[in-house]
Length: 445
Image (cartoon, rainbow, N blue to C red; front, top):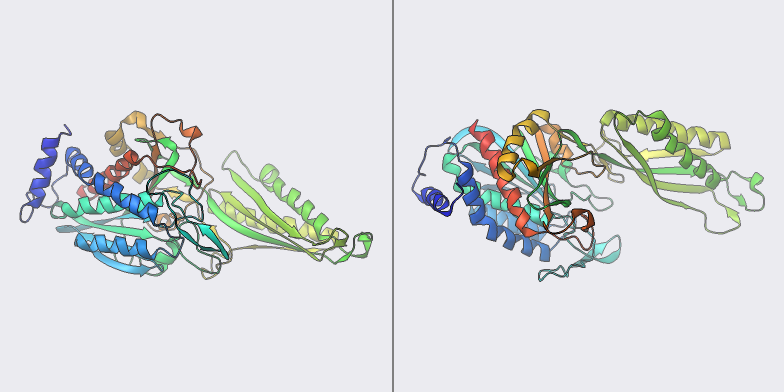
């Protein structure tokens, strides 16, 4: 069914003046497959170029320029500078109708690449005052290239589309630099959806934990909320030989750290939904025989419900202040204030929650694309993604695409964010086909 002859007929028809078929005519799976295969070499070429020229969060200037240039060449309306370096494109079909939103993130990571590929990144940049290597170690180069491939195919189908497609190329998914704002929330504040508010939105992520050709999904809560926090314990400095002469914030901090772990293990119903409280760093004191005035802890909270997140915040504040008061110290826990988006010192992302109806509608599309055996339900993931801000605004589905070669065990593959992270480029066409199919299926209804 998916033969070369059918693909050539489809591509030739698109070249006819005014299109060969009326707007709203259903586009077949064979036609989508042929068009995706035709654009696959470009998609791989683009991915290699972006991989060789990675840019950190809020610094994706070259990436944005390349995206805008290619979208404009397709006759897509383009708005740049949305969320600092973000790009939004609008493709209008031949007839008015509903709007589908598609998102790709653009930023790379401060990681020095260790893979042995011809297009290996040699880029460096300044990060927290240090010169660091820069690498697309999470696959955002593939996301951008996949979405550009989707844009090219759908632009060729515009005479047959009823409705429109909003392409959202987002910076700073990995988090903006300290003291800056960025990412999905800033794009929304600066009008990404004022160009056109989607009726439904789709996003994807390439994942090393899945083989190429496999699609992973989950309905409802999928990826965790992510909060960073700063916990400060203040005591009173004294000589280390006379602890009774002051208030020891180090011992108090140890008690607080232990006490906070009982919030998850003894106070939350973890059979209903998981949660994690992690302290990643503790700093206090400078000399072996001085009890310091202050200790600071930083860490993260992960869960899958905004209500549970807010409950944990309250319990952490109560636990820390109560234990500190019993020791004669004081403790404050600082989370990002969700009511004040301008606060940029901490990170706070809501969970990624997939709309049940949108997910259900997508499953037959996925199964037709890759076969039922290659569509896998994914467990709850404590990783996070600020795609969640888009999903809060419109019904949405975020799914995973496998990119580990079929002859390799995904459990042994270098995971995303590793300097050895590797993409089997043959897996990228699955993402192209999936986004085209979801879009045309939704607009044709």
